[in-house]
Structure formats: structure tokens, C-alpha cells
Length: 173
Image 1: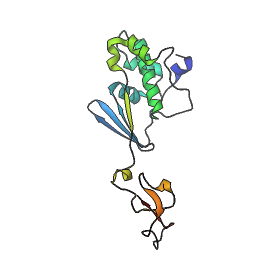
Image 2: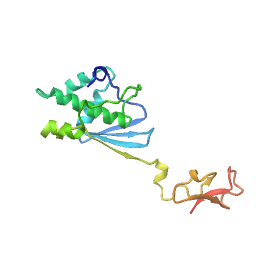
Image 3: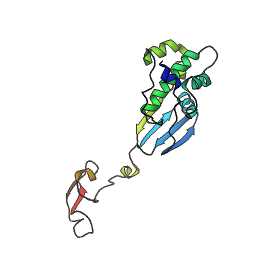
Image 4: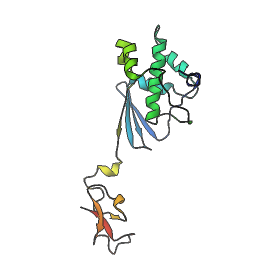
């Protein structure tokens, strides 16, 4: 771990997020990126400790139990790497958090049975609410194919002719 990564004080992103705690996990919906993330208990605790004032070493100390401080540092770096990847940290154009000379498989081998405490973030893309309807853009006036959801395309249609619309085309099959 480099000196600069030890001194970094990560800050959790709070804007444009909906956060709910459910059964020990934290569900985060990112309104800006239309993505949903599920943080397990370890990842959630680390994310909550990212207040911009605590260093990585301090977060590791809060996470550690007697006798596993080096593992706690690796866990924190792994979680920060994932949190940064999913845009759940405020960025300051700092380098990504990296495990020093260690990949994830090596980390699991080093931790052993404690691997159950690995920080895990599951992320899915969540389409906007308008995409949830059966044919959300059917017969909606359009100006280009990008205005329509597949399998609909922007074609000439009498439904838009005469309407105060910018086009005489509509999203149709």
C-alpha cells in the first residue's frame, strides 16, 4: 500500500442516492446513473465510515478485530475499490484504491475462513420508470430512432400528423 493511499480520506457520495437498510444489508439506488447496488454488511460499514475525515488506516482500525489488522486494511482497500467502481464515493481524481501486490483470490486465500466477511457489492442497471410499461413509447411522436425503445422504431405515422408535434413520425413496430 502506498503512503498516499494510507493518507487518503475517502468520502461516501450522498447526493442523488436513495439508501435503505434491509436485513443487515444496504440497498442504494443511484438516481444519477439508474443503477441499484446491494452492499453486504462489511461493504456497508466501510461505506458508512467514509466521511472524508477518516483515513483508510482509521477505517481499517474500526473494522478490525484483535489480531487481524493487516487483513482489515486489505478488506478496506477492496471495499473502497468496489465503492469507487460503482460511483458511491466522491471522486477527487485520486488514483483507484488498490490492493498492494495482491489480487482478490490471493486475499481470500490469506483471509481463509474470514472470507465470509469480504465486502461484496452487487450492482444492476435499473431502467427508468418509463421503460417499465408494456409499450411505453408506442404512438409517441418522435424525431429520430433514438426516441423509441426497441423493438419500436421512428416511422411516418398519421397519429402525429396535425398534432402540435415537432414531427410527423411516431414510435411504432
